[in-house]
Length: 218
Image 1: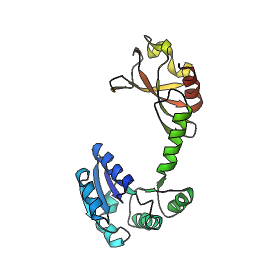
Image 2: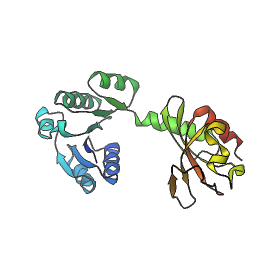
Image 3: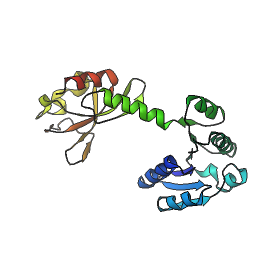
Image 4: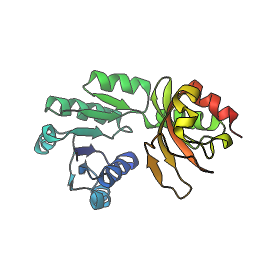
């Protein structure tokens, strides 16, 4: 369990709080808007109304005690800059700031952000990869040339084991899981796992290896 501070409760900040709560982390949220704070209370361990551009408000939160502080004020860039800088000056361990452009990203990094996240860019990249490929159900990037893919199996895999198919050497796939038709995921299936009709594999692979395989799937 980690302790998470989320500053700013727009749609992104609110969804972030909800997801951390689902994962069992300890979540504190803060925003100037009382209505937004009220809406976030069901999935926050602590919720506070306040203007985080004020040093005294941030100081009162004990920001140095949180594992990660998220600044989710991308629509208010000047405020995002101010809060990011204040968090680091007050001893925050790790600050992740939301941005809307590459220019904003550069300024946030220069003003103390440990990481900067651009949701629109990440979503655009994910959608481009997903819809440019056949038979791809989900994807997220790990690095420039590799990612995690969810794709259907080849018909010739049915009835064969992971060991028989020699997945890593033949296809360049590192199998992380197998998704069944009922939505269950078998994580890290062993070498003796036998593939069944309509299985999906969840695999870490280089982009070129994954694309080559998807082009073979019918």
